[in-house]
Length: 69
Image (cartoon, rainbow, N blue to C red; front, top):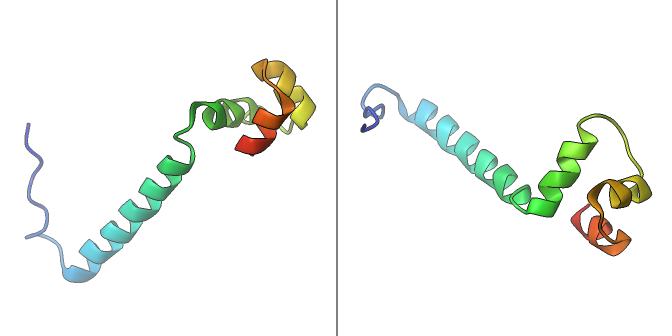
């Protein structure tokens, strides 16, 4: 299903705002794209944890956890 052509309905300012938001979203998604980093974020969603706690939860070495932080 093709997306509607919204460019004809929006002004340049609105298109610029959308482009800026898309660039920011892409940068954020790129930052969390690593599986290990995403697992850390999922575990931190329930509250603050130390590197040692994350190490145990993820069954990984401290160096790996620290690298993704």
